[in-house]
Image (tube, rainbow, N blue to C red; front, side):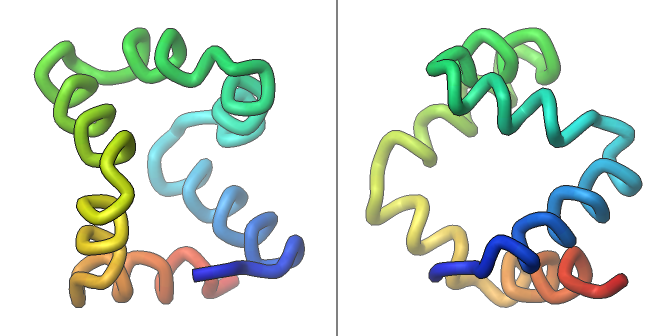
Length: 80
């Protein structure tokens, strides 16, 4: 699933509003290779472990993103 830069910006803006988390900080952490540290500080140890497990396995991540819930979340995040 590929998103345009405009779609990604919209997703980040809406995700920031809905989660209360600064998505620019998430993006910067990912670009600097420090996403694990950032996730560890933002989520509980159990949630962090589950997220890292899913994201580290491409087929699990694709399966997660193909669920109706994920599609609905992305649809909502793309709304302005």
